[in-house]
Length: 88
Image 1: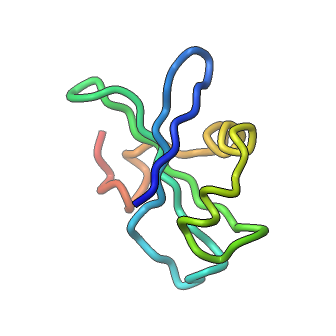
Image 2 (image 1 turned 90 degrees about the vertical axis):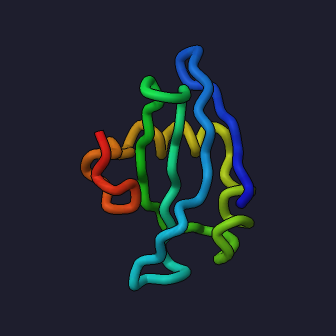
């Protein structure tokens, strides 16, 4: 799966599409934001509706870094997201 890296407040976040599909199939996608590794790793999840491409990978590629930063601001922590197994 394609991944992107963005910088937010001096921290690098890796962005990838989630593997989980909702009932909205091509109208709503999930993105997983990850920073750090090992026990210090933080993951956040957000769902969004693409305005352009209806393919998850193409849609991620069409998002600007600023749009990804905004999605990160609206994301939820991993322990509240079924896609991330409710992990803390």
